[in-house]
Length: 283
Image 1: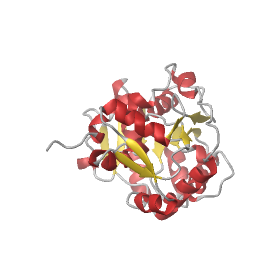
Image 2: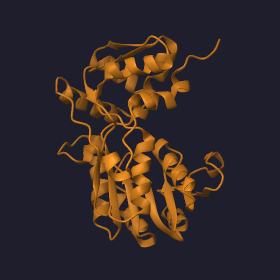
Image 3: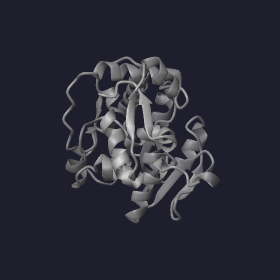
Image 4: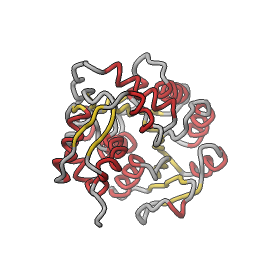
């Protein structure tokens, strides 16, 4: 049966589409601009947008399962979108966040929790992926590393258990294509907890360049984040780092291996897969 991937041009969604296609399964990808999706041949790309429910209904024809990466900055449309998916498909895997697990009321937690709750109210066989931190977030440092090898940020001592997008996708593909995952909320992490300082060091070791972390005041770090993300998300991220400062690292989960049979990749493996994005341009 065909799987619809919503968010197939993103880091995780692309991996989901590619891994499904690699198993010889029919895949349909929803894209605002199909001509720019740049997905492998064999993946059907259809035009559509979550803000256009008619386009979503059209994309759902003949679909059994759906992967959803929530691309909107608000959870307000979640109920209408969840109901539309439920009317056209049986199974849904949502890329959510570990932020939805706690009782925090910051902007990031509120959006993910609203989407999860809307899906829970439907008849869908749903599975939620709740990663703690994306390794791809460190690509936000790439320009600084390419420039002089110095990453400037706040709360360098805070630990994260960063996960490779291919591992999140592998869990998603398993849940999309096999039984036994309905109602699961998968707590996903990478292989080990590393501080931000250690993450920068690992990047340097893998790409063969001296790199280091430079601690800066929160307001300076906020200005750097605002170049990439909206203010309310920058503030939520920094607030989370402030709460975690000085805390011992959480123990990495074994969920990736439990679900897929393969251990989670290390952060060093992720860097090796993305080394070109950190390398200085040739002069």
